[in-house]
Image (cartoon, rainbow, N blue to C red; front, side, top):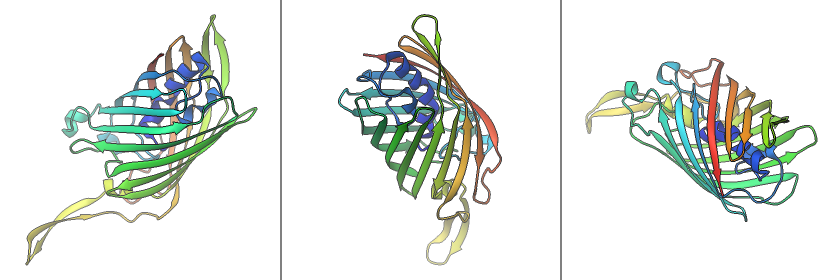
Length: 287
């Protein structure tokens, strides 16, 4: 998933879109299908047991999960923007700021009744202080995505170009099948088995694994050098199996998503073990 922290909130936002029969605000919300103009504002809170970004994760001893807050604005004609703020539960042990990461996004999404949905977005990523998060070397993300609604499944593809202290290109492909179950009079329960595959470069992850050493120089005295592990130029990053379960009740939604991540082609020194993690969230839409 290119936008990892947004990705954890997507099931929550999806539920709110289902409740209002609205067009989805982000590419991964596309299972909601086409519909009328979206709500203007969505406030969401997300918590997860692990922190993942582009199918990479910090070492377990440095990662106890996070609490994320997202505010998303959607204009009826297609403009979309959002602000994300992240709090890591392990911030005191790692001596990180209370808010250690954020994303500010602006873009455009397709609107109207169509089986094809697309978005183009620019995201500014920013990290505060020292952080164990793997994406701290990334600053700018230019992305585009397209999703097609089929009768039995929803397929999407996205491309992200990252620019910052490191430069990366990442492609992501998703395939899911939604099940919609009515609950009470106007509520909806959504269950959507999803498989995600990622491929691209991972200089950002190599930068997070860099080791530093001090070397004596005749001209400049003691010099600090940073050494990064070798990393493939372009390769498969891994795949994720997930089962988002979302209950939409009016303008509120509650979601839980168990996921299993299998990383591939991890640079030396990185965390290459497969693991389960759980994401839960709550959102409220405003018109």
